[in-house]
Length: 72
Image 1 (spheres, rainbow, N blue to C red):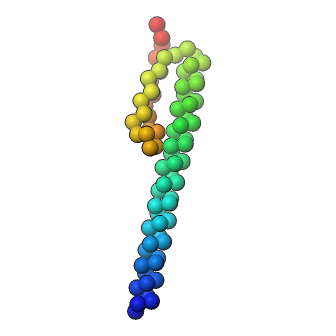
Image 2 (cartoon, rainbow, N blue to C red):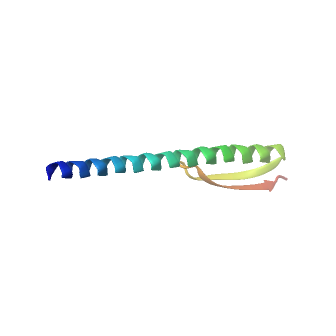
Image 3 (cartoon, helix red, strand yellow):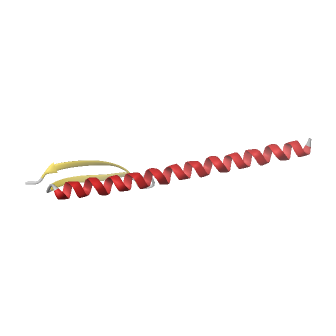
């Protein structure tokens, strides 16, 4: 009975750790992809001589909104 309980607890701890590792990995992948996309759209706006407004909503994932506009 004790061995079975120990095995169940070990499985739960391992699965929880794995789920946490996957979640952290997904956050970092999203942050990286958003960073690459931000760099690209800012570069494109600069090349075209456009002004832009960039707002980072969530610094952990770099979620953002971007608005380009004609400069006067």
